[in-house]
Length: 291
Image (cartoon, rainbow, N blue to C red; front, side, top):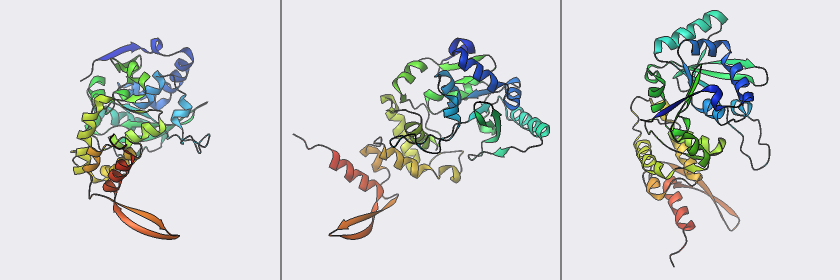
């Protein structure tokens, strides 16, 4: 459990960001959610506190700006509530007022809508209404988040963030705080590829090993098989980024295959290899010989 600092909104961000945030908080759906006791938490709040370009965060980039830059993935505004009932009341009021139905999110934990703001364009809003993700308080909600970096929230008047948060962000490192979600791996890849993070903190190693054991055995209580479908690509993505050591790769021996093409004397041969064993062999090649 973290100790959270509550700080008035205007004490944490500059006037330009205050103006942008105020406009966002006045969008009908967000305003009703906050007035009903909800709060915004996660990546959007992180970007606000860091003074990032919100238009850059909230939208897809169709193509990289240069040959060496990855396209950014779209961010959204996640709103949490003290109870499932309060969340559903907000959702129902919005649907009755606008005559438009909200869509179920991909993870099936929230209902999605789009607002529109001049200068930002379409803004994707997620109202988290799944009973397992509705918490009695902001502290309870943030304690469940997988990264310390994302344990940030705001309500109508204050920001909330853990002690040492700004110091952690200055390192551009991810600190793992929870291993209970099957999405942790894909989120690590997202933050390394699209959110300008450079690695994991040293004290994340033990929790990373725990998550890898969960992933290898597909042990994530409370989640369905659908939620586990991204584990393979996430593990492979983490390995490609160089953040999966031999001890982690061993857990996946015999689990997945990889098709490779070999070139021998001008001829092409397609062979199937064990993915984890192939990665282990690659690491052996990269390791310098002992003196």
